[in-house]
Length: 136
Image (cartoon, rainbow, N blue to C red; front, side):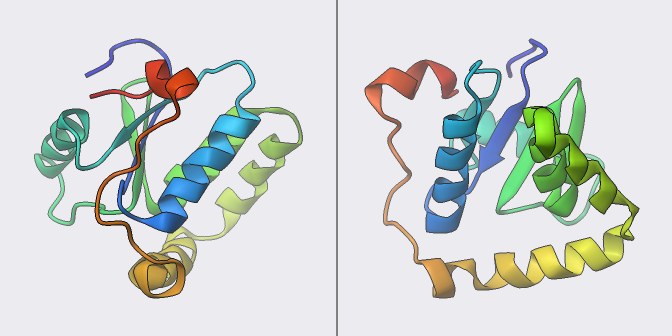
């Protein structure tokens, strides 16, 4: 696992919505701060194992690891936006909404993501110029 201070966004590598979200983060992250790994990769398996040690339900869509803290569901999405900085820091306001409400909305979308956005047969292969940002 990467032990730097770079945030790592773990994502469902076969989910079209998750892949589009990663592409959005790549476009917005001009300083190349974020690193990425599919949940199906070795790095993804490691973080899921680490998460599973303390929790019974394991996320299957996105997960954010930053400064030795793991964020899941709506917390992962919101903290990703906050880390962009600038106007995106206003996403912190959404943290006042109780997590059970935010996660209910998040889980509804996550549960239907394959039906609404489709699914690939294999994980996304990053563009050559972005490969250095992806963990194995």
